[in-house]
Figure (tube, helix red, strand yellow):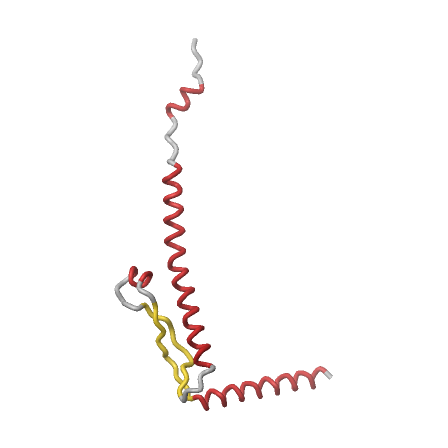
Length: 120
């Protein structure tokens, strides 16, 4: 009587997925997640850069808010590869901005003084 050897079990097993195919799938998933994340981060940095430049501007009108937009609205590929530009949505006069900053500083000072007096 013959016993089934190790070769008999291997012949019925399904072939393993090729290593290159696994690498291809993993690379595709990383690319599909990484590219949009990189675009979103770069757009966020663009918005911060423009708003920082505007905050130190001496112009009479200062941009106080906005967002980055795709250079062309041609779908996903244009969104990923077309680049971005900044579009300002909120404007404020330079004097109004300075007054708002002064009011915030004064309110912060008064809140600290009140907290200090309550601690005594």
